[in-house]
Image (cartoon, rainbow, N blue to C red):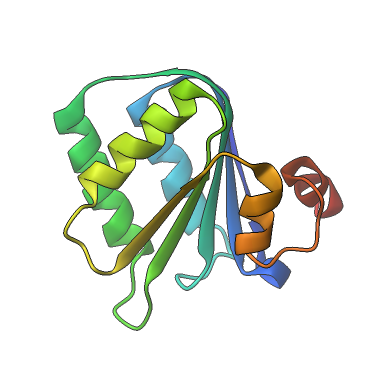
Amino acid sequence: MPVTFKILPRRNLALFTYSGMVGLQESMEVVAAATNHPDYRPTMRQSCDLSRVTGVERDYLALLRMQAKIVESLYTPESELVVLFYAPQRAGREMAQMARKSWEGLNSVLVLILDREAQALAVLGLPEMSLQALADLHA
């Protein structure tokens, strides 16, 4: 599964793009790499483009452990962690729902799942017309 990330400090955003079959170990490694990036800040919003996901590893226990590590590495007590999933296809929505369920009960994590790209960009307050334009603009 190819997964990439971009840290966009001027947009206060960490942009993750997933495609193909999503593996949990690779996902965790990418989050770790993003949080170790010199421009990353714990107050950044997280945007996950799941529009090209075709499937997701279904190890729920491993997912819970991974999501706990993600919250631990991304969360600061001073702010709420905002995670937006752009998931227009069924496989991406399933992945986003799994993530949402694993964070249930954590008041510090706000999870949004949207299926329209323009709406996702608007919710994040971004002027770009597409996630690809956003990634290209800051390439």
